[in-house]
Image (cartoon, rainbow, N blue to C red; front, side):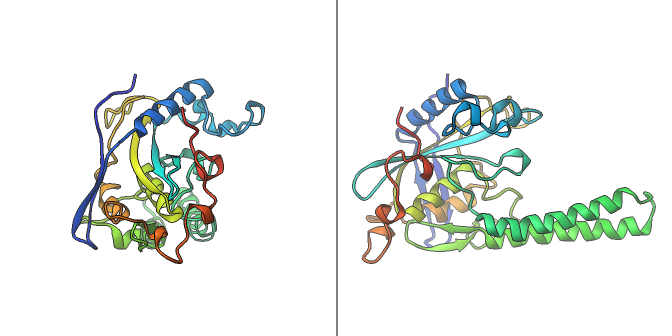
Length: 281
């Protein structure tokens, strides 16, 4: 059984110099329904018949050699008062980024393939050459530095390319929105809460509750256990959640303003699968 403790989504926004917070609301009920679905189906591609299921998205494959994953549910209201429930997953193994019925990643497919994958391929080629060199080779040391610099530069480019949108109708790169001292950790922007809030802001729907839970083998590093609810992480999520939540505690969305797009133009209906919707349970 999932835990019943309350966990909220919160963060500091540098733009307005305020802290913003979103509680769980009734999103935990939808999350509990999602857990029941996981137990029954054992896979992520719930929109396709079992005979057409992608074996890579089955839990036996996803959690093989992995600790487990975080999943999130965001309950929202449209400008017409309809309920929309969105679902998201944290980074999946094997480079899987898009699954029908789940909100998309922050970085669009074209940018990811042309910028990220292309550079990752170059880094892998460097690694392949290094594997054939002697451990005390000067060429090995040179290539190691080149690979390290390429990896660091790629991460910085990704942080500059990740687009974040909030409920004031503002947008920032992840790099500019990150409100914490020190460097930005790898994997920032790939967690559930940022994906869910960014998607809701872009579609002009208002979040009213968010719940995240862990599913899979127990995590020996964090102590997370299957079916338990947890708050968004402090190092990767909280520093950008303040910006993403900004405007949510002010009357009216950016989509309510004259000339702005709203849920009708975005084509979102309550629980609609292709918009990342979660049927009510």
